[in-house]
Image 1 (cartoon, one colour):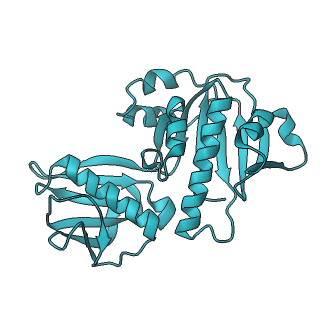
Image 2 (cartoon, one colour):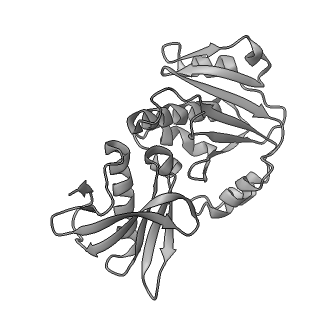
Image 3 (cartoon, helix red, strand yellow):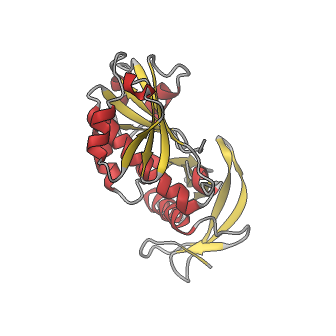
Length: 264
């Protein structure tokens, strides 16, 4: 199974997967059911969507390990998350069945887009849906925002978690989690005072988006930047608190110009 997976958090323990409504909303050109008819009970189903196979499993209890509560506590973009998630009574596990070329970044991104569309359709057809949890990034987003996210080419606010990393004195860095599910590494902009945190976060997001489009093109020791006058050194390594290997990016020379990213 692919490393890309998600959960839909439900307030109704008796909620069932609405197979007919799901298919009608997605449309016959995109989606069809697979399997032996077990999906009729609304407990489990296999779905072919955009040529990829996804499994949806209903679990009639809350997520047991505290991960949803932890994600809600970290969801600074959703102040009501903690209160909302206290209503959870059941959840769906939604995941693609990995294809032979799922290790290719372009295929992983396409698979993630299909998964995002499926999640948006599920919450739109299940009134008890509270939130969506994207496992690789540990991001929790409200069900009400999924339709908008599914329209984005790269819904980075679901796929990636972007956090401040404190440094020495006034220095601040940026950690990006969830990128490893696509390119095998997360990303850290090491703490610096050369750029304000918002600009540094924009750099990190731009470079993450560049990697999602171009693949893992950086080699250990490469430089990246938005212009010939900016230099960001790329090193392979690890970072405290991030379980995956990372790109450690050190800002050696800053340029406050327009956003973007490139390999040099």
